[in-house]
Length: 408
Image (cartoon, rainbow, N blue to C red; front, side, top):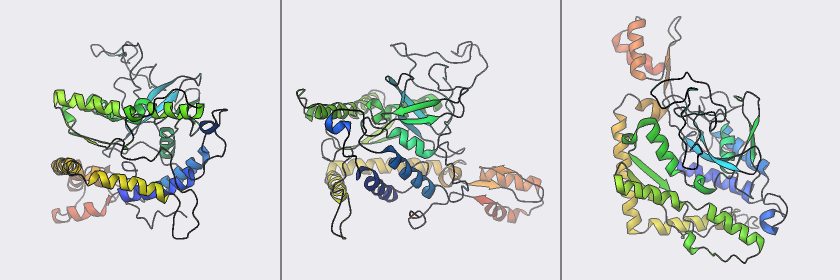
């Protein structure tokens, strides 16, 4: 929502409250996590998918035009996004860490760790194999992560893949249009293991695409969950409670944070801010209370939202937290101001594109300077009118305000 739809934080919160009521407010009465038997998920995945599809239709750029299939890949020069998920193996038992990108990253694609990689010409002295794919593997002999072109999934599918939590939602099945056999791939456990805190993936992606010097500031936002040391480790519980414990431990996000923190302390390559207060928010993963209300003045889920808000208010009220936020904000603003002086900023910040509508001309560009130069060289336009003409031919992102994005 923040990157592809460029939504404000208050609007993101509003959409979460709607999703919470539609999905978490309506659990099934019988499910595996509650009784420890069978293979029944706690929530109906179709309900979640409808909510996500509705958000996509209401929040896409007003100028986009095509609202039928809203896909994940970013336009050239815009904010790029990477989402972590778990991809099920064909046996539907084992799975692997998988990155869904809105941008191309084929630098180290291989036939083994890419879903359907495109062939490349072989090159010498590049660390690539004869087939044109890099063969770097982990100590266990496995390829570390998938490298390929931006996946043309719909945005709701990406969100669904990243939220296919074990025992809560059934795995998402997606047909890959680029597959030679038009096969399906399943995604599950979007918040399981290292996928639950993708800070290391983000750092590695930027490092490999642009070099370590390009990493300026990393901001990691936590969920204030309890650290493992404070969790009840008693093995002799009923099966449902033990299952909850396994899920809770496996979604622990602190290990990636500690790794990044140590890396930053040892090398000082970048500024790192972790906004989190472990153990201060008692709300569970899918909590939504109350699910029903009798008073017309109350809204479902208000207790859960109050719990989250109160935990945040307590954290942000601390002097240490205020200093952390102030330092983070100052450095982010300073970084933005430096970028504002570059030619790429207009496109990145506003999504601006230029399309010439002069006679018999179909020239397009996402660079304002290049477009104005085109007008000077290709058309008999007075210099005093160049800027005016460019603005007439400019199209930028149009954000949907709350009243424009209300459900119909």
